[in-house]
Length: 91
Image (cartoon, rainbow, N blue to C red):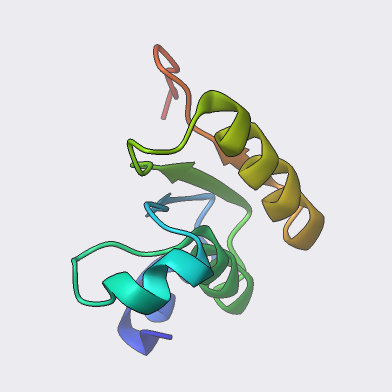
């Protein structure tokens, strides 16, 4: 886990995090410049983040896959949401 990122996100209301790969996919694609939703959850928990929004998905993943990923992520960090096309966040 990147401790600099944890400190940057410390007590944030919202963390928007790259979730291109699953942990299994990342094992063979490490260094491609992307991350996993599981790593985003670890950072959100360590940084005491209120909400985690996942984005930047693998284009090979279907909408059904993203829905399943969001459900699994919510099981680990309930305030997790998967970004959708057209979704707007007012800050």
